[in-house]
Image 1 (tube, rainbow, N blue to C red):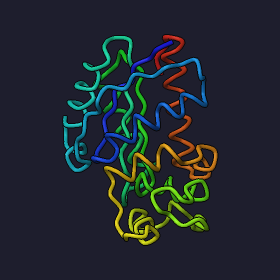
Image 2 (image 1 turned 180 degrees about the vertical axis):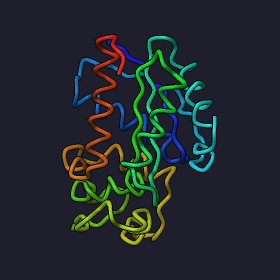
Image 3 (image 1 turned 45 degrees about the vertical axis):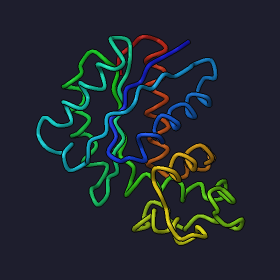
Image 4 (image 1 turned 90 degrees about the horizontal axis):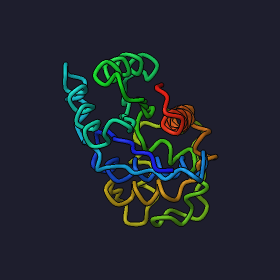
Amino acid sequence: MIVRIGCVVEGHGEVESVPILIRRVAQVFDPAIAVAVPHPIRVTKSKLLKAEELERAVRLAALKVGSNGGILVVIDSDDDCPAELGPALLRRVRSSQEHLPCALVLAKKEFEAWFLASAESLRGCRGLPMDLDPPTAPEEVAGAKEWLASRIPHGAYASTVDQPALTAAMDIALARRSPSFDKCYREISALLDALRSGSAL
């Protein structure tokens, strides 16, 4: 079975990483599902928070998947509280696309916090040390990109290269120790289930 999911993301790294993540979750959720993910719509968070910008991006993503697709929006929460910002943004997403199943995920702090939660599985990947361990509270680290960069031999983290590679390598089960990634996993699974059954979220 093939399902189509249109994405709205904010960063250049997420343009490549979110489709990888969706396919990896789908493989765990139901290996019989093949996911087609058109090139994501990228809009900065500051712009997405403005009136009508998120709605416009969602409509563009919907055009890419057609009447039988779904929509996933993935944004970093940065200093915002996901529990407060998330519901308001999801209402805007659903109001702009009432006929397609939609999901919205806010990575607490940033997408890279999910790598910190699954750090053991990333040992040796992109030059990360073989004794890499996660910090005590991955989602509370101020600057997950910097945390990773400080542990990469050349001392730089390039989101367009490193983020997709780490997304492909991280252990999904370990990443679910991060509450916001666990929510991401559950939201993508619910979206896949809705598309598989032809129901709306």
